[in-house]
Image 1 (cartoon, rainbow, N blue to C red):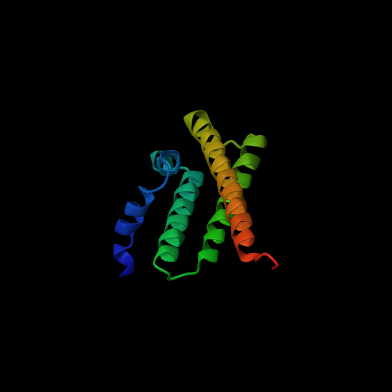
Image 2: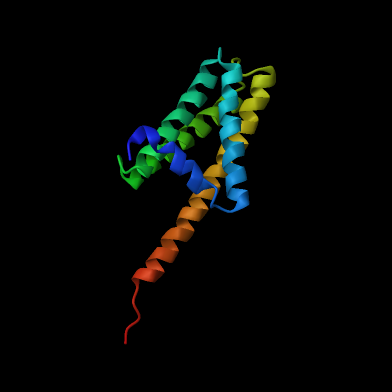
Length: 138
């Protein structure tokens, strides 16, 4: 399948997830895309581009252009972004003010919760996979 057509079956496969997973992914995407409303801020552009990079990595891994391990780069990117935004809030950065400061606070909560979900789910998948690899001694 050509890479430019990968998003259609990818989105179709997302519908087969539990409802809470699909709902959470939609909320997370909308919260990150809302950075476009604050486009004059450099931080908003950073948020938007990090979402685009993560989406590109996800689609490229779906069509096997890059390995599944490349998805970890997206997690590293989001972790760094969350840490950077937390430090900006803690230091009361003057570029964060008004509604943009509220948006960044909500974004930190959403992205942090998403990283916790991913970490706990990947840990569960790894434990389940390792149990399947271990064969009983007979």
